[in-house]
Image (cartoon, rainbow, N blue to C red; front, side, top):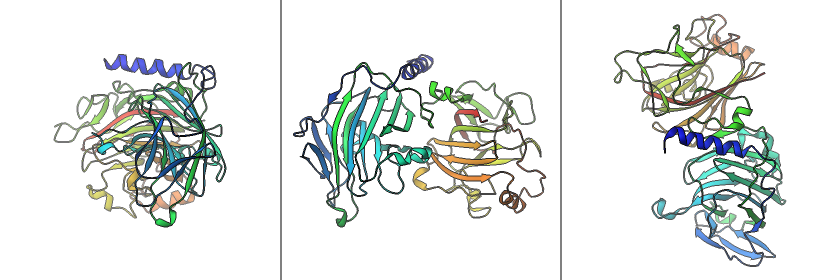
Length: 450
């Protein structure tokens, strides 16, 4: 399909997603569990026990077996799913949806979207995980106000709405996650019993009841203002538009950008191809393009972007510039930590990926970092009160207050100590750095904060 037609189709589907009041109001519910036996379900992968007790499906953990799944015989595309579950203790679990098991993928391992069941202190219940595939898509750190929705030790009502590219989850009526994605348009539903690490954990149980689904005459739930993860390149969902986001780069138009210190987009050193804005390496372009900046300046903002590093690459996104020239300012470091020497310079890792360059190291886990050649999601949030956050793949990795005594002390001990008012410009363009390494950017979005 032509890319423009495909994008138009996605937009139409997404507008329909927001067009109607609360989900599935006019459709008929279909029971997925008859309350008597496991008709319509089958076990896959691990050997955890699934049985029907007192009108409930009860899953029991077994030591020495991988993640286990009780899978529907049918597959579902667009639907609203509701069920109730109760976790005995702190057993981790999940609800698979639009999921698959194929012999050509990890020898039949269940993979796909999962709505998290997490009774631990982390409290990520209702977040969206991509089982055996991309990992966390929506950790609940993005929506901390929903962490209290899950009732530990009690029954919880889960709702999962999949309509077109929009995927949303609720626990006990509280919105927990919202993503847009196109990877798997349909698949089975499954109840997970997670693998356990010790024999002492054997016998832990999770119970499910009142499992029902709607698949026709679906009415999407109304807009609710929670963070959204959009995994569709070059697409700005109506929900994000309602939140105030707009594109700085949509996959083709560079009109928002000019050379730092110039008045037009560079003629060389940067290219737009396949929906990506790419700074070229010195091997690819004889002429360097230099840093580029937005034509507009911003006071308080939330910037979202995706980036893809080549091996050993170095780049960055700067803000707070203007007091000391167009390229001197605060920097969200973009770096191949494993291969670029800058990762070992500075102090305590303050020049590594997603750090506030040369000032504050990013607190991150390797499992939330995608390697060179894969896309990472970043965000910079500069609040009106000068609080600043750096985010990487759905997790906050840096937090500080611009202009605070701690901030000023860090600057005084950094390479920027000589620059008066460093990083404190009241209005700032956004800068993409040309460090002579190949780095791709896409889906660059911004909203101004009041």
